[in-house]
Length: 446
Image 1 (tube, rainbow, N blue to C red):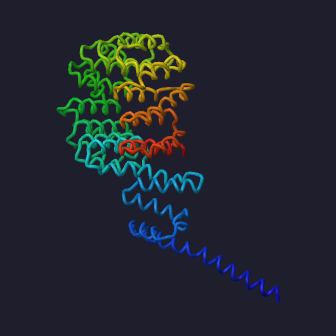
Image 2 (image 1 turned 90 degrees about the vertical axis):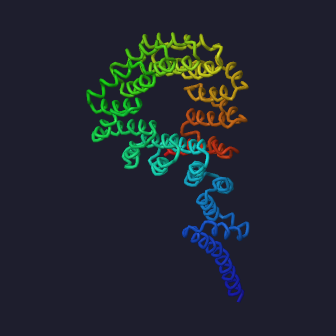
Image 3 (image 1 turned 90 degrees about the horizontal axis):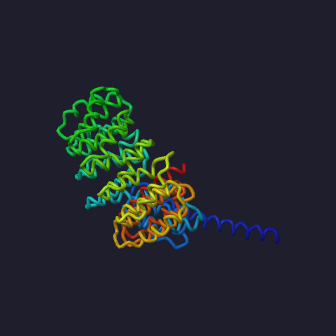
């Protein structure tokens, strides 16, 4: 009799537990059905009616996060994600990726051109084939700047270069868009693009003509190669600069002589372009030209020379860089710091300069330092990272963005944890820039 009583009690307990377990499942299913029908606000409303314990279920939180994202509200999605991560004691990589993308996409529809520019720069930074549909949408933007960023992003991706919409953008009215499309098509490996480039050789805009010549030269057309060599010595600074960049891309046999000649040009922009190009020539004559440009009267030219000396490998550039560590222009000093760290010079050599520049009143100088610190290599990465973490707390969004991009560069795929924190920034542009870098870092982790 006692045995029968125990069985009855046990069965009652089991029935109660099954009923209790089934109830949340049914409610989750109802919420999920609303989400599946794309009734996102209704799904959120139903979740709001649940008890705190049921609303805290992982599957309910996931639906809530995705509903917020579909409604264009990544901020609220991030709040819920933090709670989910705390409960799970680990990241949900799918949702984190969706939230990072959400902070980018919400700005692609912003009324402000600058904010849309930030968004499409972030999509470029993602460097994923999954970005192609969003970048294609950018080609329809009313701003030539935004369309250029979208075209540049597509040009970097094999899937983007095959896009029909990308190829059609060769007819865009903006010169920079046409240039980006031609350069991308040149890297496609598809010889059929020659037919698209040949008419562009007659365009009135020099940058378009130079880009077309680069395409033709890539595919062995002598006409294009000869045109580039001529443009590389053109009296027109814009044409000459564009040709220098093209010759660098092509690793032309004429590159060294063209750059050395351009390094003495009267136009500062030409000297600066030459200085950047010389980073691809690890030869004594290139180093000598760059050392000479360290004394150029204009800071932007000196910065270009400093950056190139930092990038050159297999030659001694440290002694020359040290001579300009006390340059009278703060922006030059900032990039000297980065180049010395890139060359492996001990961090203590530049520590005082970093401290000084980090506290500069000029936003541009602090941003320059943040960008420069991203060049740190080897053992210098950790110390540079600590300096960048300080700059990530700067009061100006521009500086924080520069620091975030350098952190991503220094840490690579290990930057996810740091970048995830920056999604909580109070500035829309910072969050979008962080989203692009976070998407790329997660892509590298795969």
